[in-house]
Amino acid sequence: MFGVIVNVVAIIVGSSIGLLLKKGLPEKIKTIVIQAIGLATVAIGIADAIKTDNPLLLILSLVIGGIIGTILMIDHRLEKAGEYAESKFSDEDSGFAKGFVLATLVYCIGAMAIVGSIEAGVQGDYSTLYIKSLLDGVTAIIFTSTLGIGVMFSIIPVFIYQGTMVLLGIQLEPLLTDQMITEMSAVGGVLIFGIGLNLLNIKKLNLGDLLPAIFIPIIYFLII
Image (cartoon, rainbow, N blue to C red):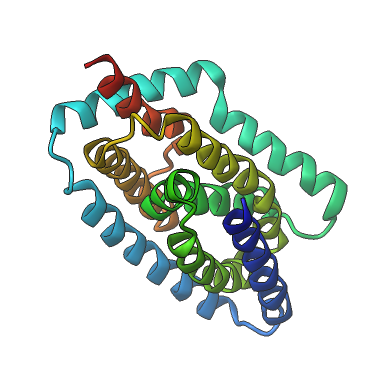
């Protein structure tokens, strides 16, 4: 769990720096920064998604995961959690919920979150999580400077999600295969692509409801 804790600390540090920069950035700069991040996110998502060796599994994972997530109302609950935290901790930051949800999805969905957490659980190897922590810290500076303190509060779901993935890796160590992890990362890539679309305001997608899709490949390979 040490790698997960390092990741959380990196986000806190990055968000703190971002808060110091927030008031000094003109609105036009904030807009172009978000657009740049959106384009980069789309590119990263595509790169991860095309690694799949089983397009049918990719589609089924998204459909089944989306149905499960919709029934559980994950996206709605994330929004409500952000709004609740905003009402308790932030009177002036109306973008709190947006920053919280966006940062949570970005930090939890990526291939590095999946692979790094599983490596930590299976092999005790934190190297991927350390790299992710550095990237997340830098991203937190940018996100917080444009979206506000809601980004910092994403550490709560990040800790729960990645901690769960580490424990899952420990329990499933004898069953995990490279193919399984590849397909999980591919599903994550599609969701990252969706985050890019949200950032660019091209289409508002309920990506929280699609989070269970990442775990469908595990069930698929265990059944097979």
